[in-house]
View (cartoon, rainbow, N blue to C red):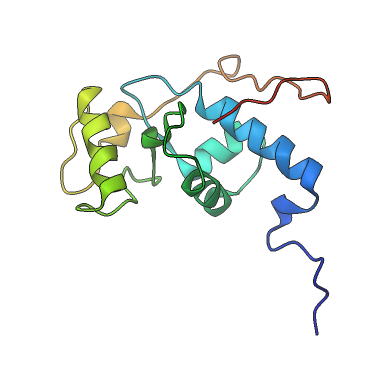
Length: 137
C-alpha cells in the first residue's frame, strides 16, 4: 500500500512550496497582455516551473469565479482552446478573447499572430518571502 503523505504531483511536494509555485504562476499569468495568449507549458516555463502544463491547467481550473487573473489568455500550445464550446467557462473564454480583438476560428486562435513572446527581461517573478503579501487570484 502506498504511503498516504506522498504528493499527487511533484509540484505539490509541501504546502509552503506549493504556495510559492502558485504565486509564481499567478504573477506570471498576470503579466500576459490583453490581445495575446500563452500556452499552458509556456506559462509554466516562464514561471520557472519547468514542464508542468497539466499542473498549470489544474491550478487554473481551481481559480475562483471572480478572479482578476487573465485565465482566458491560456490556451494549448497550438492555439486550441481547451474549454469546450457551449460550456459556461468556454463561452466566457471565447467572449473575452474576442473582446480583446482575437479571432476564434475552429476552436482555436492564431498563436503565431497572438502568442505572447516576452523578451528575457519582460517576465520577472518577484521573489516570495514570508512577509510578502500573496497575490490573490
